Length: 122
Length: 478
Image 1 (spheres, each protein chain N blue to C red):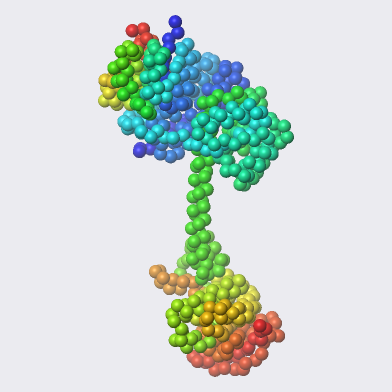
Image 2 (image 1 turned 30 degrees about the vertical axis):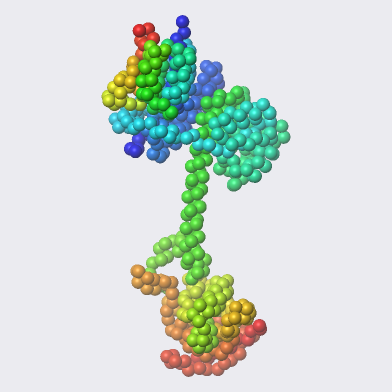
């Protein structure tokens, strides 16, 4: 079965680029541009995994993660943070907010694919 | 904001090179269905490149880096990796450079700034869409209006040029094949017009027209897009074009400010010096050095008869407006005859002809100037009458001789001025003038090719001068 991913990214080129790469690998890809849209898409489409940039407009990634983990309808959906923040404290902050894993930008695509596979199968 | 030094592989020359390779390899990219990705790579690189030339927000820089790297990787993965050619080698090099850049400690990876609540807003502009097909125009207009751009449309090259001349357009999307004036002709017209040249033009064509695209880029198009449009690509292209236009506009604005300053300098100095001297000073600041030359010049002195007495009878404001009216009119005349005003001393004018710029006709010019000055006093008097100011009469004296000309004074205060006996002689001759009279010295008389207007006023023993000086009067018609 084709896994359904939700990609949350406000930068249009990055969203387009990652979507193309994931589509080429056979995933179904949904898009959202901010935290609020992300929550709405999660509720409506129940993706298998969310790839979420944390620096987002309207509602940022950390808050969206917290709100998602408080919502029983979507709390089970794993979230993988896409982040510029390689600092340990930033990563901890992401994990505290409920992210299951993270990938730093620029994305190492093979390792991202491994992480996605791991999260979907667990 | 720390600036990030961009590795060599990301330098603008390398990126331009990669652009060329992508364009040259378009057939293969097309076969692999990678045209869009290759164009999006170009866009990301362009953004990275313009970003590196100024302080760029780390968040933005990182986004450009990420997308450029990602698109490059897509291309590399999809192209046959066993086949190494210049393009794949360049792509690998690029990817490595980007990875290196992002791994540099303190460069971009460890940004810990929080997200700006105001996301940098995409630049919005006024776009002219030129396409003969109604559907294309409608689709583009809708796509672009939705993201906040103002959109004008034109269905032919002719009407595009018309709109460009009447509206303030930031960027042109130009279809190549149109009936009547086609895209290529319109492009060359735009690029040949100094008023329009700076407006970025994005050429739109079908994939089969690769040759035309290359031709258009050579003749000045800034970018290209293939039909059917990919909306992400379209928006990215337009954003890049608008950014270029904005930088260009800023440059123009800066240039304008410089011109204003130069105008200001000209206006300030121009009150005292002719345009030539001001240009000289502006062009070679070493001209401001103190020092002097010996020059043969004709000196002009003029004053208002009985001015001191006039002053005592008038309130100060009237004295000033009387003086300004007179001096203003005389200044114009002197400058028109290539004279340099050395000084105003109350009502007295001291001007020199033949310096700082050599003028072989300095005596003749000075004489013509004196006559026009005397004639103009009549006009000035008409004005004074309507302002209830008293009537004036003037005397003008000319003398020709060798003086020291140069920047005279101290470091703190210096002016272009003149010294020498001929200056004093002129002043003494001026004292001899009757109302409405022009008197010239014998040296000036000898420098004049035509003596018809002259009459002998005899020898005069001048105060402070050893030998008597012969003086001539000038006949002039009102």
